[in-house]
Length: 256
Image 1 (cartoon, rainbow, N blue to C red):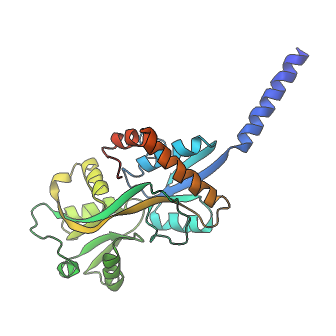
Image 2 (cartoon, helix red, strand yellow; image 1 turned 90 degrees about the horizontal axis):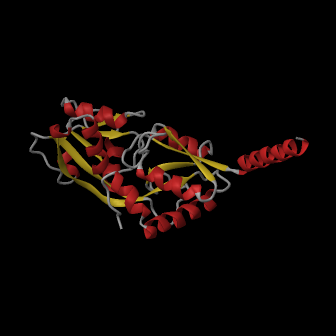
Image 3 (cartoon, helix red, strand yellow; image 1 turned 135 degrees about the horizontal axis):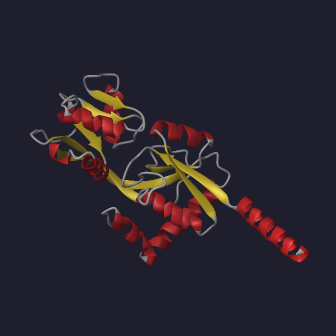
C-alpha cells in the first residue's frame, strides 16, 4: 500500500509538472467567419483550426476569444493577449508576423439587390453613405477616402463593437446606408446566417486579396518563436493535405 501511494504521488507530481510546463497563447478578434467563428465550437474558424493544430504539436494551448477589433489590437499591442487573427500587416505594422500567411483576404463593395450602382473608383462613392467597421484596414485608396471623410456622417458610417458587421448589414438592408465594404466570403457567410443574402448584390471589388495573418504582440517574449512555429506549421498542413481538409469544411480552397 505504501509503495502504491508513493507511485500515485509521483504520478500526480509528474502530471502537475507537465501541466505547469504547457504554454498558452491567447488569440482574439471580432467574429469574422469563416476566418474566425464561434469559440469552443466544432467550427471555430479555419484560421483558429490552423493555430490549434500547429501549436498542439508543440504542447502549446490556444485560447481563442471574441473581442471588438479595436480592443483586440489595443490588448495585443500592450501584451495582454498574445495575438490577433486575420490582420493585414497594415493593421498593425509593429506586430510580429509569420513568414507564411494564414490566408488571402480582399475587400468588396455590396449594395441592395435592386440597385444599379456599381463601384467605379472613389468618385463613384461620392454621393453615397458608405458603412465601414472601426479600425479596419481596407485598400490603400479606400483607407485614404475614409480618413478624408470619416467626420462626414453623410459619407461615412462607422460601426463599433463585436457585432459591427451585423449592424452594417441591417443598416444596408433597411436602406439607411447605401453601400457596405467587407471581405466577400465573410459578407456572404453572415448574410446567409441572417437569411437575408437575397437582398444584397455584389457591387465591385475595392481591393485584390492580400496576405492575412495571425499576428503576435510586440510585447510577447516568445513572439518570434511563435511566428516561426506558425509559419512552418502552416506549410506542413499544406503539404500534408490537412489544410485543404480544414478549408473544405468552410467551403474554401487553398489560396495558393
